[in-house]
Image 1 (cartoon, rainbow, N blue to C red):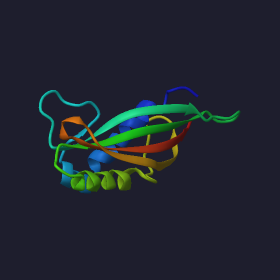
Image 2 (cartoon, helix red, strand yellow):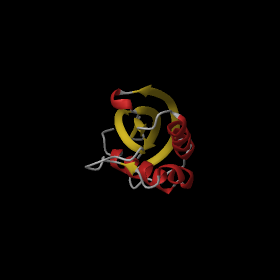
Image 3 (cartoon, rainbow, N blue to C red):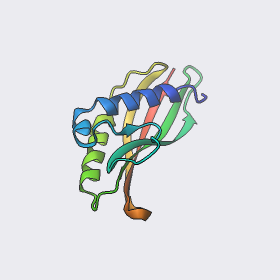
Image 4 (cartoon, one colour):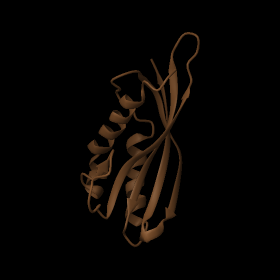
Length: 134
């Protein structure tokens, strides 16, 4: 299969994150598909890279999408970032998202990486796998 499900998946993931009340209570409306120009908030969530592999068979077209959602903070510690990352994980792991194209077979948490970055930032990258069939 090709990359045809990617936009539908991205829209559904973004919708699930902005609709999550626990996450909104911590980061407000600061969930981004594209980072805004100017000063960024102290804590925010951003949709990140994606890798897609064909997973169709002779009867059904399909694809596996590994995608990253990042939690980034300029706060001194990881506390709020880890809390936000937990909310992201709860919102997406096993979620039954409705897609505008294709059918989500499953959505699973794969891994996370927390690291300090230059400029005093802290970043947590959460990777998920989505299996989508036509």
